[in-house]
Amino acid sequence: MRILNTAVYARKTSIARDVNDQIVDRNYYGKTNRCSNEADLDILLETRKAMGDRPVIVSLNCKNPTVVSEFEAYADAILVDFTVQVQAVLELICGRKEPSALLPFQMPTDMRTVEEQQEDVAHDMRCHVDTEGHCYDFAFGMNFHGVIDDERVRKYRAGEKIKSLNKKSV
Image 1 (cartoon, rainbow, N blue to C red):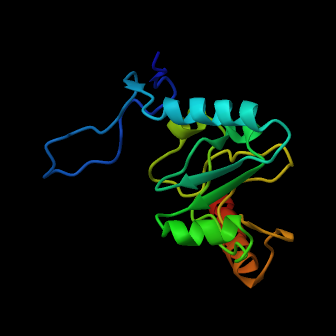
Image 2 (cartoon, rainbow, N blue to C red):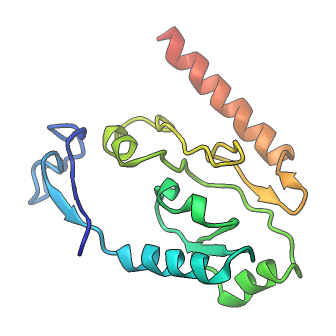
């Protein structure tokens, strides 16, 4: 059985248009999509059951923001990569290298958030908060010591505060 999702919160008219494009309106309000990776969730559920109390690590090859709330509770760790070599992922899982990357985008809390996100506004999603209380916002990342809070993160947070202040003053 395939999971069907129908967009009910999306903009009714998209502003993403190009006069030279054959598609005049890119909205997806009311359109239905079939979940193409439902089998991956089934494999995770079977693995969780088979592993019992042993840890389960989800390795997520990510190209776009993902609704991790659909599977996060079944994983002890989520390792997100952006099309790197498998060897690099295995070195992290085995503990030979320490994770150091930060999320380059927000991870939405649910599909409603995905639909409500406006294509012309950056960082406007409600972000997923995991079972440990970590918010999967832009520039979030963890290493073996916990949440990464280095100069990169402070720089990005400062930039976000400035953007937020500019939005309020307009």
